[in-house]
Structure formats: C-alpha cells, structure tokens
Length: 116
Image 1 (tube, rainbow, N blue to C red):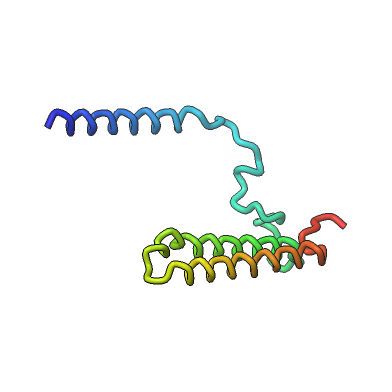
Image 2 (cartoon, rainbow, N blue to C red):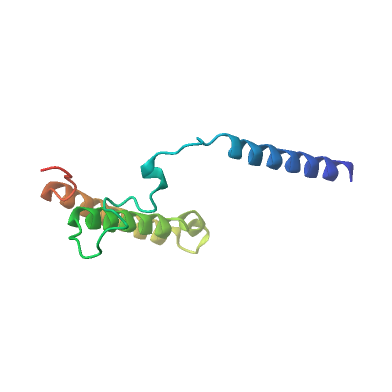
C-alpha cells in the first residue's frame, strides 16, 4: 500500500509541476502570426472569393497522403503474430515502394518546388 501511495504522490506532484511550468514558459506577447487562426497564407478576415494558391493545396494533399501512410503502417508490428508474417511484410514493402515512387515522380516533375 505504501508503494501505491508513493507512486500516486509522485505522479500528482509531477503533473502539478509540469502544469505550472507550462503556464510560466510561454511568451506573454506572442507575435501576430501566432495569434492568427489560419497559417495557410491568406487573410481569414478578407474576401472568400480571392484565388487560392494551388501550391498550398498540393502540399496539403501530400501531407494527408503521408499521414495516411503512417496510419496504415502503425499495425505492422502486430503483423508478425499472424499466420503468415511474410505476407504482411510484403504488403508493407509494396505500399512503401508505391509511395516512394510517387514521391520521386512528384519531385522530378517539379511539384515540390515552391519557387519558380
């Protein structure tokens, strides 16, 4: 029982210390860009009919694609407990190869170049 109370006390104290430090560490006067709700390159209070840069859209799609890749590969360590772990490894390698080839294609086509 003494060990349990000690662990609870240490956890509570550590939580209180970390919460207090998180309130004291941030800057008291953040800059204008950090206060903006959007970081996508346009003024959120302006007109909604302004043309939107296609580059932002392409970067967002690439981010979602590689975020999806991580979500698909997360269960991979549990795949070795299946009846045929080689099949799981083969599918994971095929997914990574396909995404790598797509990234190389985008890179060679200049889709990742921000400035002309």
